[in-house]
Length: 500
Image (cartoon, rainbow, N blue to C red; front, side):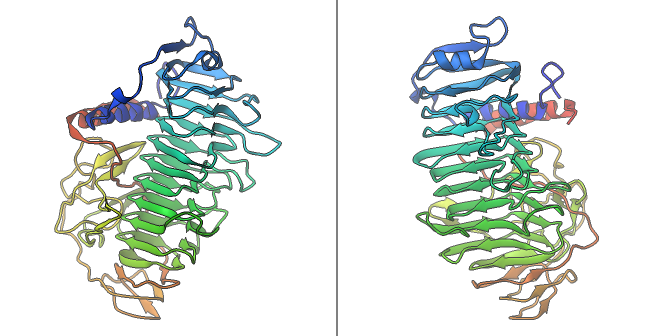
């Protein structure tokens, strides 16, 4: 915790990483016209963000001092704005006040960037959709922000000219509790990228919901943990060209819905109906349920190199399962603390296969999620890529570091061996290390290779080893390089001082 502002230090660290990484990637900041800089805070030009919003014109940068701004809601109409908390997080607490009966901030202008801002407590008795941010313009970047205890963290309307990027941000305890409001809800926009984020404990609604035409869900931690009451962990109700790669996905015992990931169940109205579900670690801590529910209009669902652990049906609907670890103890570092890194001897080690590419996009993960709100590089350390969101490294760093090396357990030892089999239906047990070939009945195994069908087998119940959480990831427009490594090291120092 930042002792000056009282704000979560891990989010400040995430913002520093994001900015340094953008520079390292060669981001072209010169394409945006240079505007004025407006300052907000005690003793500054504007005392409140709403006053700066009224004065802002296109291309301005608004710098808001860290601190609490209670009951100060507003709309932003100008284009190409950058709005940034400085010296810590600027906390916008609703205190019963929303702009236009919608949100703490209603963003009407195009191409807005919001960084290092905390939004909380927006709730509406009328329509139960009070949001931290309501997006009405085209184009939004959110970086290093914190949304909690709102009806909706972010609510974005339909706009096919809009591209949305959210990264290094946390969403917690959002939702009115009626099942129709969520941690974040993105309408039918052109594209939505969600990466290096932590979304958890939505109240009855979904932890993540998007109707975007293109979805890139990369290297996040999305979960209910022990006490969360969310419905779906991920909901893509209208399908779309969707890439779900390197995530930690967990359903808790208090969930309101037995399904974990939903795709296309409200109709395949988006242009493409293609799902690429690659190298995720998915854990069901509920008794029974369905890991993946896929709508009938889906034309392609590639489900490859994932860990599915816990009881329930793996796949309901069309899809192709290949090289997944189903129903066998993956040997996580610590289930109780949501640490999904692999121990030596895990059957997931070296058991993966090259996922290839799709639509010109490489599907192999190149990043891993590092909690909280960070990332580390992922590189294959053995004879083949590992199954799941983490790459094991027998002498690598642990998940608690932020260096550019691959995350993994420090325990040395030989890796387990597996033999892939094939199945189209049936029940996966939890015993054994070699998968068989079957079309029905029961198979004890660690990996599966399944042709498409309407339903795959059922994952066996959890074994005696603990589960845990963390996800690996591939970058989307954020490069590595020395600057990124320095930024990661900086984050590590901040994290060491965090009280979170």
